[in-house]
Image (cartoon, rainbow, N blue to C red; front, side, top):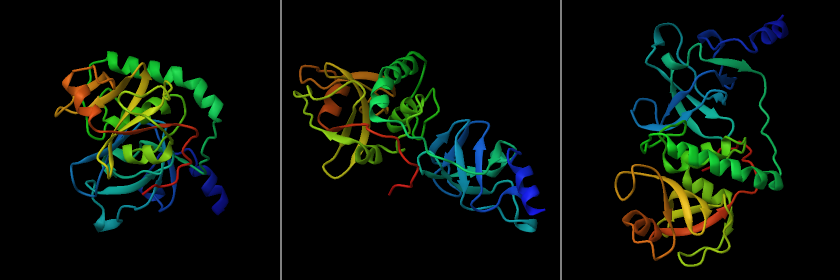
Length: 256
């Protein structure tokens, strides 16, 4: 009897009586993910087709309120965030397992031209910088990079500092970038922490989504070479930390 009930719930819409702690679900619409239980700060955005695991569940009976948020772990990148319950109900289907995809390093390299074309297309649409933006048309820096690779089924960690740790380090300096290949990632920030990421194109040029302060408030292209006197290029050149090459897909573990 229990087995029959379990099998019937697979593929059914999420509802309060099916929201068990640890259960797995797949979104059928885009949802915002928030940084905490009650705040307004956007943490990430989660596109239709992504999967998640419920970490917390809403209270039942008198404890239930539609304003409740539930904490989830996104299965493709291990990222944790909060969903508004009112937005989540009936917007996900149950699944019984999740398996991270393996893509070889050679195949990742084969898909990089399509990733770069995807960013170029995203740039052609009207967009603004959005902290936590990962669905588009508005992105933050790491959201743009993650979405670009995800367009080719290659999952990276969510945040810039995590993406830096995930990649194979490549030596780079503002006047020394011959080691870079199209599709490599550039990392910017302080000596202690990476705070910004970009996608390398060629000849010193890179795509990135930068904010209003010291940036373009949108996706744009800038150059590493010291001869580029554009204020945005100069600012990020001064923050260059390093570069990295994507060699594998993220396995979905939660990263610190």
